Every structure is written in structure tokens, then in C-alpha cells.
Length: 135
Image (spheres, rainbow, N blue to C red):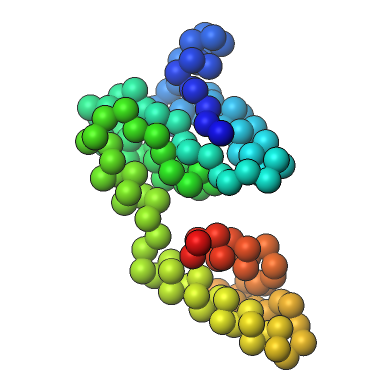
């Protein structure tokens, strides 16, 4: 699943600003529909401003935070930015592995939850996210 934002913006008469917040509602609906249908997270939309890699570098992490797990590109110059943003860092991978190991230890001791190093509750939802990152 993917959203054709340039087409949607043209159909609606929307002119996205630098933060592209005008299309946040559509992005959120695509993410929710994908999850509700049990589909993998969709790719983020293309950016037609392919020569402005600074703007592309700013908007791409926003898509990742919304749950997109990649981004479609219209120009090869965009590929390194997408790879940088969507490839988990060694620290992110280590954290996910640590969470899974601690979760298994918690299960072995009879609990399905534990408190993470950051003081937050780690439950099945957090573990699902860690597994998705490692997958």
C-alpha cells in the first residue's frame, strides 16, 4: 500500500508546506488502514523536490516516526538518505536485542512485563516493535 500524495494534493487543491502537515491526516489514515488490514507498513510517499536533499532529509525521518518503513524515490540521489534513515543503527539493534533477552527472562520468571533501562514499562507492544525492527 502506498499513498500518491502528489495526485491527492492536486485532487484536493492542497499545497503542502515545508513540513507537509497538510497531508498528515492522509498519511495517518494509510498507516491505520494498513495495520487494520494486517498488511506490512507501507512505503512513504515520493518527494517531487528531488534536488532539495536537505528538505528530503528533513521530511523522511517524519515518515519513519509515523510508522512508514521505507520511502519511494523518484531520483537516485534520494536513495542514500532513505537508506540512512530507515536502516536501524547498531545501537537500535542492540537495544531491541536487549529488550528481547530481558523479556524472555521476565517470562521465565513468570512475568510478561518489566521496567526498561529508561524507566518505562516494557510489555508485549514494545516487544512486537523490537521484533519488527530486528526483522
